[in-house]
Image 1: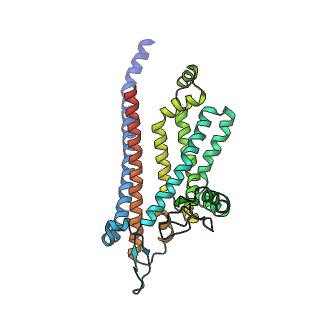
Image 2: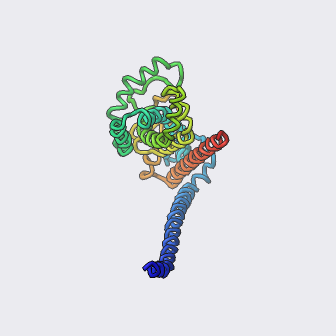
Image 3: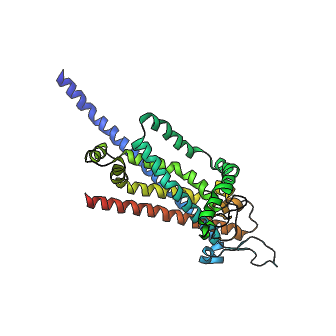
Length: 331
């Protein structure tokens, strides 16, 4: 009986190995095809943006980045007719994203610490999905909420308080009568970025070995010292990557920002005044362009936005590698 079983398994093993080899090859083809398809889509996307912006690049060159005029007027007698520059848009994109990170990163990390370390099982099981649910709210709904609820609240409460306390700083100038502006857009972006940072950081904190946390407490550390010295310290690279991920989300948001930023055409020091961003200007004007040069200039804005996103992702990789290298040396 054993001899027959051995012979039977031996006779079937070549077929099994052949099937396994076929499965390995199929898996290799499918996964490599998916990776190559992603690269192909990215290359085609970049090629389309570059080709679309070629007319504007040849007309304005790198001066497009620091010139602030954006005038789609085609009248021959108008000053600076059909002239475009993205300085105002780049400024608005950077400032709104920075405001979003300044608000969202501390709150997101605090929420993650609470859910991963401090909250009891049932509490975390309820609050965690609710925080993640915030990421599922469509941006247009957040924009409407920003117009109806947030902007009046900022106009009557937050902006006057900041101006009264810090009005000697130019960025906290006189409040906007409408409540719309760069600051409002930054707060809306913070709400959109917050669940991403909180979810990523929570998953990071959950991967910290429980033995390390228990050992720190056993050595006499307080809970705050354990969180600061063990949980946060061992997750610095991940927190940096989560921050850059939130930055990438903030840089590319268009609809919600368009609804609450107020469409400004000049660079102002006050955060409470109207502004605009690269993504918002593309969403506002691409359908109703009046000239090929205006269309090309919007493509140029898209190209600048792509470069900013690329820089942000490269920064995330550098931050992660730097902390990993330091951690390796420490070990």
